[in-house]
Length: 133
Image (cartoon, rainbow, N blue to C red; front, side, top):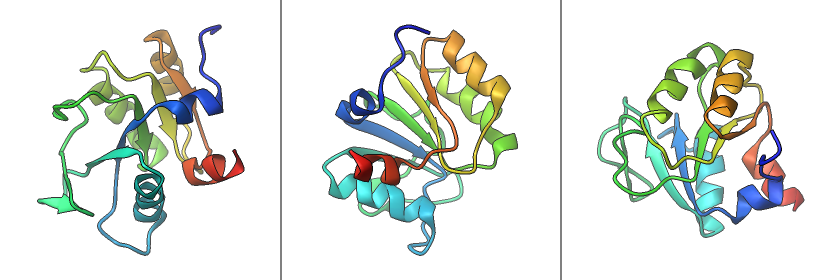
């Protein structure tokens, strides 16, 4: 897809929904979004199992229910759960990037996200990629 965004273009976007944002401060799924918040990004935690807030940010059960614009969806869920996450994301029209964190891949979901005009990143860590810039 020719309109695929580069890594620097992705990090120029400001609003990131993190699916699977953990309340456990020791997990990468907590550390990575915390790092992104510290870098000035707006991060929306998405975790149906968590109530209230994480790091002062309102937690949402789904990406679809976030009332603000979302540029990037960062997925911390098992590879087999990715199609369900994508179905939720497709309820919106504003998501430009569907990012699966390190160790997470799903070819069919990636193809479907690309068909819907999203740039797809698989098996890469947002923290590592941001640090590398």
